[in-house]
Length: 131
Image (cartoon, rainbow, N blue to C red; front, top):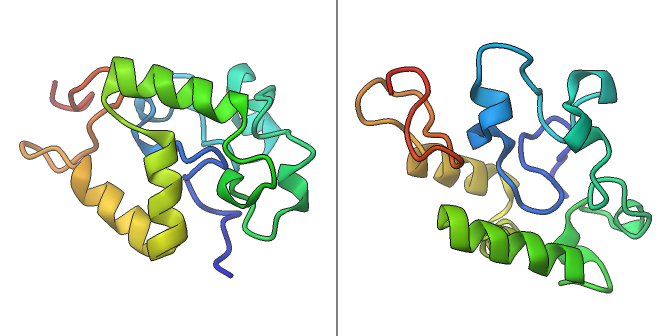
């Protein structure tokens, strides 16, 4: 089993590396798996990140939970598919199928800015470095 503790991929399948809170220049969040003092309030208090059932999984990803996909995962997936054209459930399926390292590599390429090589923000739809 790959170690997800240093990963920027959240338990729900969100790639924190493309989140506006991670990419901004002030009050930067270090991702869902970072220490609580390095996270935004939103991430530190996240119900999925703090789910008691998640703690029982070996992978520490929602796809391994006995209640997957739960209402929380379905809700965030629908919101992100609608607003940002990205699916948490699809991300989790890819992590399960290809492994975390390959998924992270795929994500890096998928969200890479063609202009500067930085990361495109999923929330803005463009690179925050070069706009």
